[in-house]
Length: 122
Image (spheres, rainbow, N blue to C red):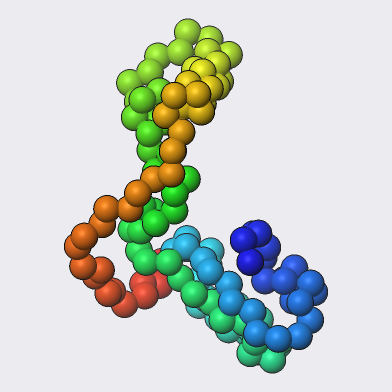
């Protein structure tokens, strides 16, 4: 499923069957001291499977690559003279990107994945 829904919405839209929820490592996605997601899952028949993306793996998400290009080419060291200058600069970059540079990104990671234990949010 490519759309983003909180588990509370998913349980209503898919009242039966197993549901896999892919989450990044944002603190709100962890159980926390109250085990909120474990309790949620038990209330719904243990049919939810929470899968976390690797820590420091923003490169897996293609839009993160594009946002890093925007940040490096437009926003870093920028000094915008008025409130409307930044949105104009961003839109100009988007138009230029779409016209001249738009392409699929090729993943070039050749290293080894580091398997770490899941950290709990503080």
